[in-house]
Image 1 (tube, rainbow, N blue to C red):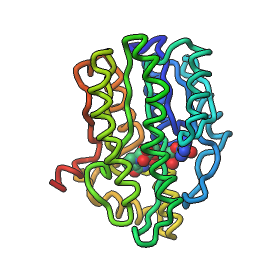
Image 2: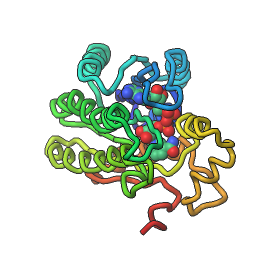
Image 3: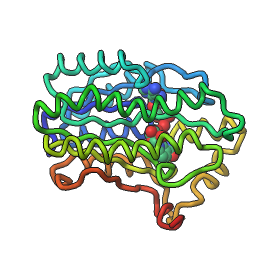
Image 4: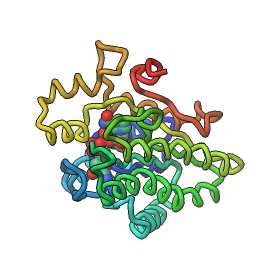
Length: 269
Ligand SMILES: NC(=O)c1ccc[n+]([C@@H]2O[C@H](COP(=O)([O-])OP(=O)(O)OC[C@H]3O[C@@H](n4cnc5c(N)ncnc54)[C@H](O)[C@@H]3O)[C@@H](O)[C@H]2O)c1
């Protein structure tokens, strides 16, 4: 149990990659605060997680023998992230790990995109990552210890037509991670990112449904760039990379990212 008695905050934790990350951290004895928006965003073309999903995920993590707490928190809101961080500090007295995972997506050409769609996407991914770090990292600095992991994407390394907002945010996360890593290395805080390829989570399922695509055909299409044709990238694959970045084994890794993309970006050159 390499993370026994540590405390992690995971955003967007009710389902998909976030939930898998919570389970991976709990498997090493880490107590987990699961946070999620638990309501829909009007510019997102599929349903976001519900409070019932967040509570169900929290119960499953608690059943692994660690403390698990659910807190509703919209990462776009400074006040909400501030209040959530204060609640965690009150309950646990420390925060060892922060995983900025909450995310949304949509597919819209730049010429058709409205301001609200752009703002919601940038605010959730990029401002959300900033806000989590802004409020949590001071506690890590005080403790002279901490691990921050942000979830970027293949879309943080290359462009996708109709994904300018998503790619801008995910590229931004990598720049943010590198910069924050430089600020906090002297305080023994590691800051890294994980860049997933396509993972068939409710996000991708919802996007496919929105465009009326057959789920299997859509999966094939969205996974076309993966080099391994005999395997799917699962939320657990993403969670394993996040977990490693939270373990003592990665102590000399900071300001960088792990692609878990089945070779997609290697092929893209
Ligand atoms: N699924 C993929 O193919 C893929 C690929 C690359 C990167 N990612 C990234 O992985 C992360 C998790 O995505 P997923 O695929 O598990 O999607 P998902 O939709 O299954 O899960 C995302 C979670 O984030 C929550 N959320 C959305 N907006 C929020 C907000 N403003 N505040 C708090 N919570 C919010 C949702 O309710 C949901 O529970 C995202 O950052 C996503 O961009 C996913």
